[in-house]
Image 1 (tube, rainbow, N blue to C red):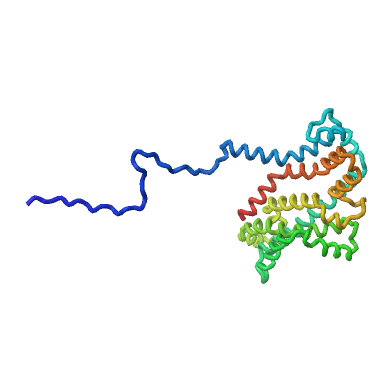
Image 2 (cartoon, rainbow, N blue to C red; image 1 turned 120 degrees about the vertical axis):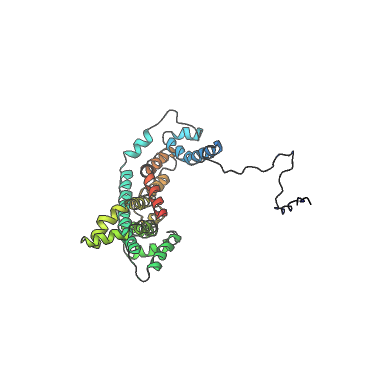
Length: 303
């Protein structure tokens, strides 16, 4: 008897329906936009123009006269006037306020870096009871801006006798800059290998010596980052000096801009020139150290 061929059983349905013959597939590509797409560059250019337009208006407005600004507020200078900038640069008030802002920002930066580095070193390299709670306390400090505590700060500074004194501005600025400093520096210090500290201890290096010789150089990107952030924050601080400083002799630049605008409210061109020169130091400082800030924050995230 001849062997009969048995047909294989049909395959179970997969639940997916393929495209019908003769019809193209309707599936659309959902690839995300890439940096080479023109749409990305157009959107980025619009954002840059939107952010730089107010700055350009202020800077160019200082090279115009009040008549030109009244006739065409958004026009270009024609002819260019440099007298407004010369008047500001030759005034003693402007340079006194620059000096006050430099002292306030410089001392704040030194205090934030020194205290933040020491606190971060202890939290990152040592184990003790309440360590996690202390770190969480600094993290919680990020949720309380200076605006919330301005009234208690004012009372405390007044009781300490620091009214109309740069010290009454510097101390609170250091306190409110410490949380972000600790959050950034702790990952840097934790990333330092423990074996390195043990080897240094075997070679006779003390804890303080290890801190200065090894910890500080290895965490330098984070130190530079928190220093730049503290300096820019203190330079642009306005609310705290507004409550603490009532004497024009100790005004910082943000307060000086307000006082100058109130005094010469009818001289719009001169006010724009003063504002341009007041924001120039922080703008140049941030432009030079932008990569340092990004590198430091990237290292903190990786740590």
